[in-house]
Amino acid sequence: MIAYLTSHIGGSYKKNGTRIPAQLSTKNGLLDSLQKHWKDNSKVLIISADADDIKTNDSIRNIFAVSFPMSGLSISQMSICDKRSEKLVDKIADYDVLILAGGHVPTQNNFFEKIQLRERIKNFDGILIGISAGTMNSAEIVYAQPELEGESIDKEYKRFLSGLGVTKLMILPHYQDIKDDILDGKRLFEDITYSDSYGREFYALEDGSYFLIEEKTTTLFGAAYLIKDGNIKQICEKDKSICVE
Image (cartoon, rainbow, N blue to C red; front, side, top):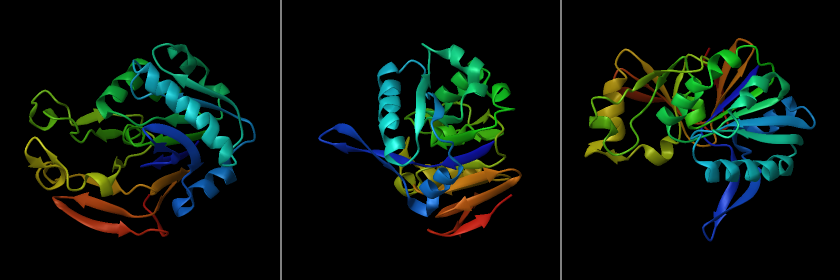
């Protein structure tokens, strides 16, 4: 399996409130790399973040069904796995590409557990693409950074979850957008995430940055930061790469 763990892959933009298909991101060589590994007429399965959100799931599938060929990535089939189609995970071996959609991390984590995705992808031999929450849930242990109002002060909210085990890295997407966020009256990073980082390492990605896992090597492409023991430092810059595992 080759895995791309991304913050954002592009593929659409909004115009007058409507999302329009567009080419996938070319930042840090992402599209070039995908084109290199892509099989012609690939069969693609999207695993949803919210199995109940039929409207959003269909929209994602319909947009990607246009944006991937637009990006030089030919497809023969684009399917979505949600509450209507959970049985599709029984046929994962028939697909060439799995896409783990973005959304609310705990909601997606629950769905992954329900369909036993961790066990089902162990022998998957194609391309896996994680997007945002999908990337976060790819970890062995997932850091479910509080996101919604009330989550950071809810004693029942679980910040650490069991993930898919694709990587040991705990990844946080969209750093450039959320680094100054306030949640429940606290600074999301300085007051919440930094405190959770003691004894742990979090990798914060800017959009356009990603991890490529190929065989036993994990390479980071683009701007990213390491949060560890209450401190943060930049470890990679735009258009550069480093080996992290």
